[in-house]
Image 1 (cartoon, helix red, strand yellow):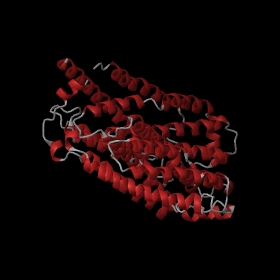
Image 2 (cartoon, rainbow over the protein chains, first blue to last red; image 1 turned 135 degrees about the vertical axis):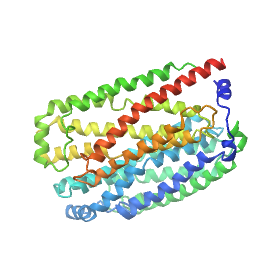
Image 3 (cartoon, chains in turn orange, yellow; image 1 turned 90 degrees about the vertical axis):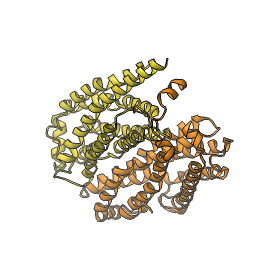
Image 4 (tube, rainbow over the protein chains, first blue to last red; image 1 turned 180 degrees about the horizontal axis):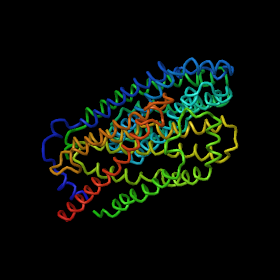
Length: 249
Length: 234
């Protein structure tokens, strides 16, 4: 296989020499673009972040959906069109994780767990609020159900991200080639902890552990944002430092 | 390298596509597609009246809706043969294909659950029916990401004889554009962008079917090319 591949795949032009990392840079750019869109969708249009309270009365929930219906729809149309960008960020992270001296199993686990996470951790919330906004005249009890299903799936789909942080942290800590800085591995443990402190949001309807609370939401989100910025910067460094002969081999 | 595994996955496409076409034909709500403007009582009556056809068609979709995954993985294998600097697009494609498949499963569940107790409160039947249609028609982002990744990988393929000809890259982008209007069905009750509309339903499904048909033949050529290269190198 290796021998045949080198015979067959010898480049005809020097395109790879001119822009040897173009595919990785395109995937890299998908991350800041996606998170800007994510902010636009969840903060500006749909007002799902920061989340409205789980303690709202039925009338308040109905009012949130009815006054916000068009914005919920615009936001989630944008999400339906662009959520695939998240796949591109997995693509580049797996390429870089495969370069590590730690086993490739962690890279593939990272890829698989994020492919799973897209629906329960993000898009499902969109479906629930679109179903509410599509017919805001539904029975108010159904609107409350959709509100709970949307916000709990969004804030409370924890396991996917626990595994994401876990395999990423293990890969970095074991890696002897220092593809990513070691501190990013330890920081990923912090990311994992933020998922654990969000667990009580399945029980509390008010206070710091509710889905909009100081710990379950604000602390977790703050650490996530810092982690994501560090990831993007470290990823930039990893691609930049990747030796060309590794690519052109 | 032996290409039998890829050929088996390739030929699963026409087999499962035929079954899905049967399901599409049996489902009573596609010709014409059910309108979002139907009242809850009309939707509930529709389910009571057609419960047998709905179950029959959606049980087939339940079995076959995920069936294009092996074919998409053949494309991943072919992308790994390309003269790309890295496998970033191949992995991105794999991830997008897996995420996208979950949505067919979700839509199918909602249709079948609605048909399970058609005597349920009409508001709840309408809710499940809305869920099924919205999950089926609107989340086009993953297939668009797949097409975009494949197109970019094709454009960057530096092999002397590329794995896919360049027009396949352009074709992927155009097919992705024609699937985009589906997302707008989250907003519209009628007109071309509603879930039963010309653009959101017919153009999008037509683009998807045409896409699969064309990709079947170009992927088959790519596998043939791989087999003959392997013979020469052996």
